[in-house]
Length: 87
Image (cartoon, rainbow, N blue to C red; front, side, top):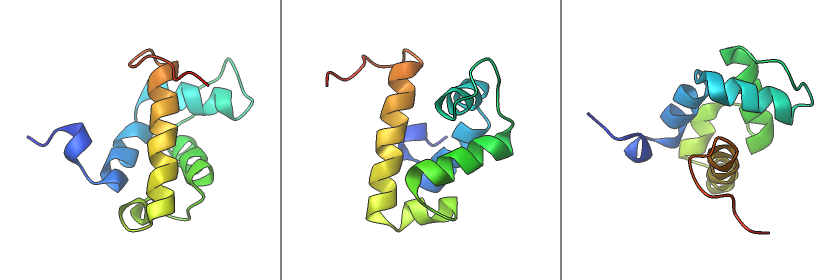
């Protein structure tokens, strides 16, 4: 079984968009607190946040991949999975 961190970024993004916690995070970040997105709305949020048209771009576009990594860090901190970065 492949570890999440070893999967291609596009596959990670697909899994993330199906995560209810990420769906709630995406709704909050979109200005809709108290709601939870469905997987397709979470995917749309992710595409906008990473400035891409398709999650496949995360595997080939270095800037998109960097944006995705930053989004994952922000989400992981929000979810309490990692310590919040100091700004």
